[in-house]
Image (cartoon, rainbow, N blue to C red; front, side):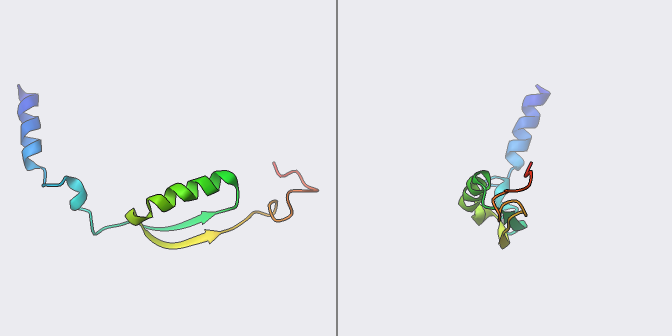
Length: 77
């Protein structure tokens, strides 16, 4: 009985539209770094689909010392 009462009270105290409206003006600021690998490209696509939820300060494209030469002559792992 106490659990049901507590649930009813919590639902009654929730603001209309859920908690998302309380924090609508506060978007986290992010700087995104990525390289040209396939997994990072896929992650960037997913990030860009949801970037309206963040305050994007910068997107930085970088590569490691192994990528610009293709990893030849060195063990890239």
